[in-house]
Image 1: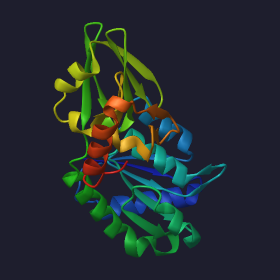
Image 2 (image 1 turned 60 degrees about the horizontal axis):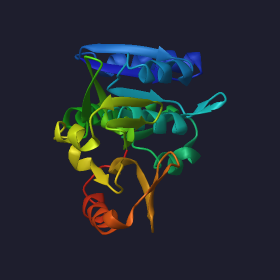
Image 3 (image 1 turned 45 degrees about the horizontal axis):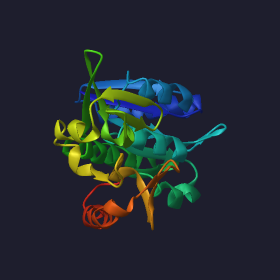
Image 4 (image 1 turned 135 degrees about the vertical axis):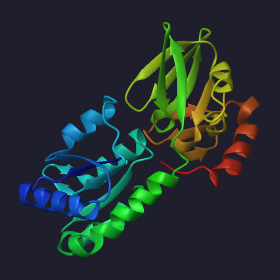
Length: 242
């Protein structure tokens, strides 16, 4: 099953792109959703009710910009493959600020969209970066995509999981949480007595702090400075960006 969303504010292009997708994926089991604005698409993704494998995005979406929408999808769904489909070639350089698989001009959609879809499907099938943080709180278990977690904060024998859009508080220390999540643990660097940062969200390393993708500044204490810097430079080359 391929779960695919198309977002385009032009109803004619939206319908045409859908017809091309259905033609190209005729032999595949396809779940296709159409959006005329990114608000509905992003709302469904943020609520956790919708996890598309592929999103085909227009770039000029009324008052919205598809490149910014792609950034938000990169964070919320690291495994989702983005295909930009636009009538404006001048956007090509800016698209490289995001994780995407192909940039297709609308005038060439019939020729190149099939190749883009095949690459997106291959990317989704081979993507090993989809890691979840499994959490238990109040007798309930839930999972958070690693890409949505900015950092962990130790507060009074509890852990605050600070995400891109909310904060969860769970019992226990961050070290215990990471010990129970072996796959996610290597992505976190302890930089302070109470802070563990998600390396995938580190935008810059300054002398005494990490600067994260949302602008947060997390202090690096003297006792952790040398080890935090060592781990940062060691892992930076091997950890995929969001």
